[in-house]
View 1 (cartoon, rainbow, N blue to C red):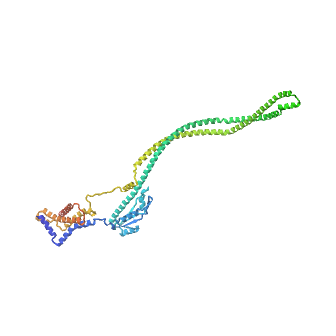
View 2 (cartoon, rainbow, N blue to C red):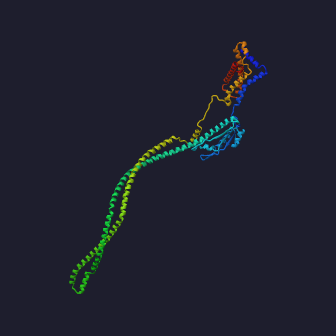
View 3 (cartoon, helix red, strand yellow):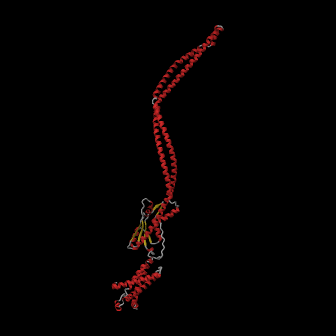
Length: 534
């Protein structure tokens, strides 16, 4: 078969001398270098980050949060050093910049003086973002900048979670306090509603009483006004009465002055009149007989009795006149006092009349105001009842969380999403994930290198045999077989040399072989169509 003969001839040519065998082996090893070395170099690119030197500058001055001193810069520094992901060197900013320039450090991470203050400002009216200052030098390592970005992103995420948890806890505690306050406010509003109802009842009673008082005050004002009108005439009348009383007193005094001496003279005269016994004794001394003495005594005795009786009446009349004079004087003194008091009385009654009118006006205003108060208290009662109901509803809308529940909720709010992953087929490492790319690249480079020594096409053979298809297949079969061998070697390196897990070994080996023979056909086609350029 011409096809097989062509393949055998080409293989014999490629292995005709030791140098040719060495060249063939070298070119056959090209895919192993690509696949093996590249995959080995990318197997775990982040596995030795602890050898990457990085400067850590902590200038954070700290802050006060909830009464406690905090320093997030020092806290992050301790976490980074304890984690050991990178080769951290804590130093000053000046030394860090010198080290970055000289290549001693790949990058600088700095926490400025206001780092903690900015983080804790979330509870202030004007919060500010905290800044993690990252300084890189691509002249030292371009990859170091990428690593630094990853580190700062991790720091930011960690701080975001921690600060967010603190802020969420503060918020939830405040909400719990607000809930308690709303509960107290709802109770207070209910008490207010009850008190307002009682106050409204009292205001209604006050309004009714004020209306009655207003009517009474109006009547009082009217009566005082009438009294004031009457009292204005009394000073003249009292003055006349006072004058008459003084005249009577003066007349009685004059009468008493005349009657008293006369009564005294009468009394003295009566006192000088002898008694019946004295007359009998004197008549007896004169020698008159008893009959005549009895006759004279019978005449004198009645007259004597009449004189004494008249004296008693005169003395009684004189005493009465004296009492009348004294009484008239007392009356005159009283009318004088009344006359002297009349201006004050008239002024007082006038003031009372004015005050009565003011009282009537004030009580009228009180009646109007108490009516408005009763109406306003009615509205207040309705509003306080609605307020109590609304506050009670608001309390039920706020979760009643315990301290542990608030702590759990704060953690959830700061980190609300957790990711669970389940891969049907999982690459064991970064290099395993890159294996399809480097295997495909190795397959292409391997076939490309083989065509440096394999003769892809013989025009003379086509002319002599006049069978271009078998000759073309023979030219393709040689690099295709060698490519399959290359892929088998690459598979062994990947699966066993590097230890990557292959889920479907047979299928993978088949895809690799098919890819290699396809690349051989492509390069052969280019050579046939374009010659050596292809």
